[in-house]
Length: 115
Image (cartoon, helix red, strand yellow):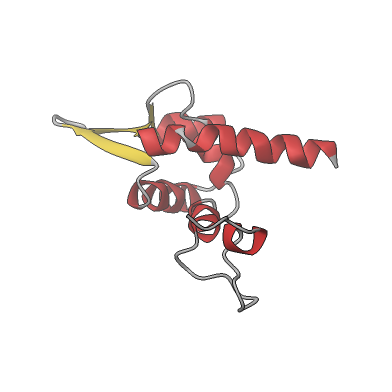
């Protein structure tokens, strides 16, 4: 087994640009966009509806919140559950993949707080 180098870990190799399938780039892609970490944080305590997240983050527009929920659902960070009936209720919850991001976000917060 070859030893992993810093260049391998950061996915740069001989090209200074990272590969799009680099795990670091994949993670950054999931976290892209303003508000994304704060939206993820709303689900640490359990499932939430759109309205509950919107009420917790009043400065976040409904359009951006809808975009972030769709982005995080497509990335497998959140799961979307629609309850039949009138009116239909939609709840979002962290997947196992999403729960694994929580310590990553905490480490990023800690790193930022220490600078």
